[in-house]
Image (cartoon, rainbow, N blue to C red; front, side, top):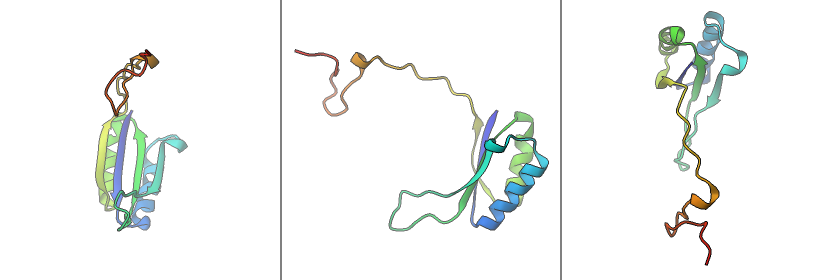
Length: 106
């Protein structure tokens, strides 16, 4: 599966893209959605929305074409699978402030 997301300037364009994607691409209902665009610049809130979903590799080019045709700017397009990080045991973790193992006690 591939993750593809696009930023849209307005909800109308995003909803048109979402509708066409649901009509033309076979996708599970929970694998496609639209959300308001987030921002870390609190003095100036983000404007726009993001349409994103999980798609089969064979559908990615069509998905990108649909999103771009409706005015979307592709913000990510990548394979879903990532190798899991090895989890450290509780005693192996470091304290971020002091950079020493937290599992050692004196």
